Each structure stands twice: as C-alpha cells, then as structure tokens.
Length: 215
Image (spheres, one colour):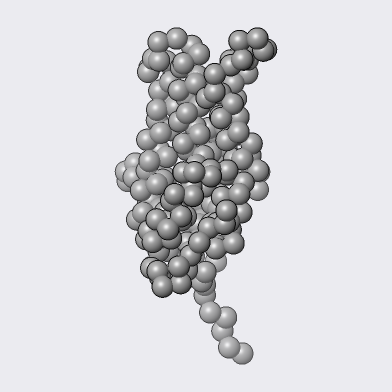
C-alpha cells in the first residue's frame, strides 16, 4: 500500500524532529550495549539476546522512518500504514518515491586544502549498514522475536549473539557522521553528528548548493 501525500498538507521539514529520532537511536544503542556488557540482565541468556534484538529492530525501523518524521503532516497521514503493514523494503521504496535522498549517507571529514573550506566531506563507501542489510537484519530480528517450534531445530543463540557486534558497528558507521536530505528540501542537505567533543548531543548543520559563477 503506497504512502500518501495530501497536496494541501504542505509543511516545512523539521530537522529538530529528525535529530530527536537520532537521540532515540542513541538511547536504544545504550540499552543494546548494556545487555552486551552484562550490565543489564534479562534473567537468562535467551531473553537477554532476544531483548537485545528487540532494541536492534526498533533502531532499524527508526533509521528507515527518520527522514519522514521530520515532516509531521506526512508522517501522521501514513502512520496507520506503518503500524499495520510494516515491511521495511516496501516502506523504504515508497519513501524514496517521495524523497530520493531519504537514506543517510555516511561520511568522514578531512581537513580541506581548499580556501575557505574547513573540512571536506568524504563519502564512506563500505562497512556501513546498507538499505539491503537493513531489510535483511530486520527480518532476522523478527525471527528472533517469535517463539520456536519445539519440534524444529534449536535456535543458534551463539550465532545471533556474535552478529550483534557486526550489526551495531554497521549502524554506528552509517550514522556517526552522515548527510541526510529532508522531503521538500532538494537543494539542501544536513550534516548530522551523533555527538561532538563539546557534548554528547546530536547536532545538525544545513548546507546549500553553491551557485555556479556565470562566465
């Protein structure tokens, strides 16, 4: 079921709403690390790993929906569909039709040799969570969160536990420093830092295209 946009429901995108989603991702990441370190305890190993995967699943869904959360009207128009028909591949395909730049683009910043430019934004090309991996991991989380068939093969908790570190590192590399484009602002993008030296808050910076000088 495709997403809908009411043409009369125009609204300026709200980068603060996007950064609040990123803050929630950070909080849920803290919960994951607390389970992984043994600081938090869900009584026994199976529920510990299952609880961890619940948080990972929520993080993956937040990544998929974050750019739409920045537009309250459009998000609320489609919220019921998100809850009733959650399929990350379909959801992201529909979001992309509204906003081709919806998925975070991970970058690293390097000192620039160009006059007037502090840092160059260099694309990270590997190691981060891709859209295809988000869909795959989301399905893996769903498998973990359903009761096992008592007559089937035992769940390999060792393998699930090992993969937690891989998934979380891919998410970290995707979001740590990234570019995002919000719906309705195709001439701009935001640089988002999940934290900075001055504090641990999420910060965003708006960039526009530099006009090409006329000959």
